[in-house]
Image: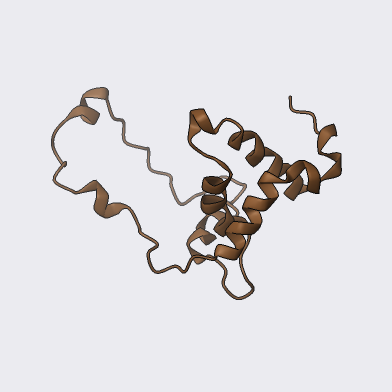
Length: 123
């Protein structure tokens, strides 16, 4: 049932690809490594998002958060750091074209694969 709803959402997004530039292929390329992978090749880069946060209040962060004003955000100080160097690149991760093709097929043929898709109600 979850796969049906995920692919229904992707289909809906891809139907508006003229506005958002995310057709079925682009969605498959971006989302396939997250939702489908081969046994033993789990994407470790997403593991930080899978860890469930603690439900109760934490004693680790009792210090008050610093207060910033709009002027602090606009100041030129501290802009020596190159923002592009902080973005992690996953160049070493092999691309699983099989998973991309499967997700693209699920998106493009969603209504034929999930026969109850016509009954899906979007609110």
